[in-house]
Image 1 (tube, each protein chain N blue to C red):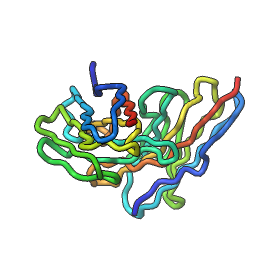
Image 2 (tube, each protein chain N blue to C red):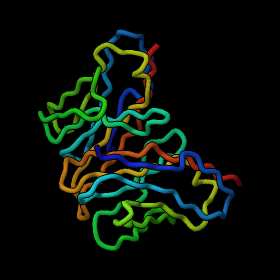
Image 3 (tube, chains in turn red, brown):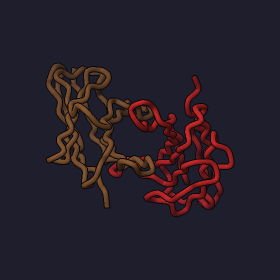
Length: 114
Length: 114
């Protein structure tokens, strides 16, 4: 069972470049999320999507763009990467099970902006 | 704004010691509560969750947590830790009936000494 897959897992890019992190889930979950994890901040929500073609801002959306043309994919784009966007990025998805909604995470994408 | 507080940022224990990690949230309505664990270099995995019913929730690997509504708390416990429990632990909340957005605490890094 593939679950959630993120690519690339590791990326080094230069300041000012555009970078896209891919996220694919095989569960047909309606909700998908992007979080970034930074020391001292825990995980912070960047964007989320309740369904295809529906996206909304999270806690730290500036500098990021998302799209959701298909239910299974939720790419995150850094339009012009900055050093402050060096982070670990986690994609997540959520469906509904018998006891409610549980969010499952991908393995993370380590991004370094130099 | 809703928030989640984990007051223990770094905990060091010896094997077989008992563990209790604090988690408090600030929201007066219905909440769903989670504990996630992140082992070194890995993604977040769900330890346990509370949606309703018995406030004492048992999770995987011998962990449990107790929801105390009057204290807005959801502390994580384990009677006897093992070296393999070394990881970072995150408490998280979603607001009942809301958009499944997980609000995370800043995490507690647990180091278990053999």
